[in-house]
Length: 128
Image (cartoon, rainbow, N blue to C red; front, side, top):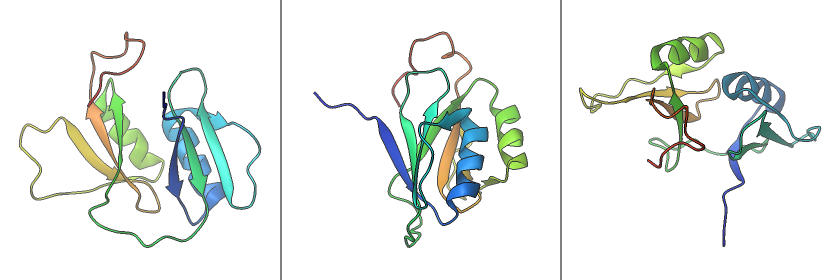
């Protein structure tokens, strides 16, 4: 059996990206980071870790993979993430009834903030 334990994000500034993702997701360092690698884990949830890999990688748009982050209060989370340095990405093909907001972290790694006010009581978020 397989299980996703970490999702790896390539970064340029490991310390800055670590601070962003810790604040964004309420994650903590699993172990002290090295010069080019750090793993952040959920403070008190059984969800995948975020590993930060400080090696240059060419940015490709649209990205082949991205994170979907569920939010109980999407508008408040989008504002909070913007205050942390994330930016909203505007896409001309976004459906009018989209339940997600496309954002990117301070280095341009994309993720979506998905409006899911009803999943907070579940042991784990519903799939897709």
